[in-house]
Image (cartoon, rainbow, N blue to C red; front, side, top):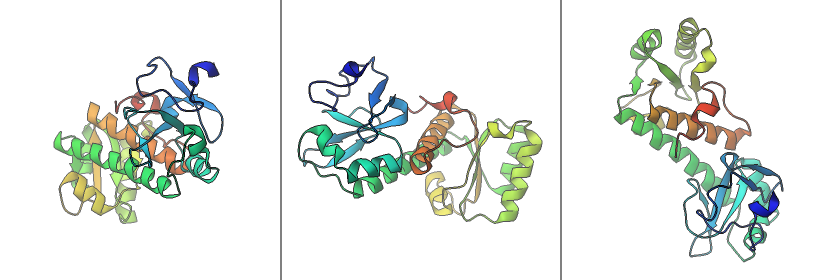
Length: 230
């Protein structure tokens, strides 16, 4: 097994297209083998800086880290990244911040596409109406939303669906972030309707949540959206 996961460069792979059949890699931080869907690939930029390759397509050799903040911080602290590449590279605590920011940016980009595809419903009244009759797959509350509005819409969600866990509830985006992504001011509540671009949002949000917390969010079975962003 491990022979397939490594090449002559040790822990680094031979490039993004070196073996399309490989579905598992070894994490350089934990030394455990995991599905690549649970990992992040990193490559070295021309200036020697290590950068995340979220889409697993950047050229050059890559090393793999379990897709959690703790695992990446551990890899940086133990200097496992330089060891994996067998060369001097620049990888400090800023790499964790960079990776978090890029994962969040990917979530917001996907949300913007949902808006452009008319799959985003915004405003308390419209979201309430959508929960009553539309194929809602995600309910978004701005991180600073008033508790009363959140409670009422969550109750509407419970009334509509026997299994409310089918719908992802997102509370970790600010109103400013929702405004920018959806190109509308003062977005506090929104709902996403079923569609492939909504699946992409859900997959990217699940990845961000796993990175920050170490576990997947509830709602919208992760298996359904696992490959949606590709």
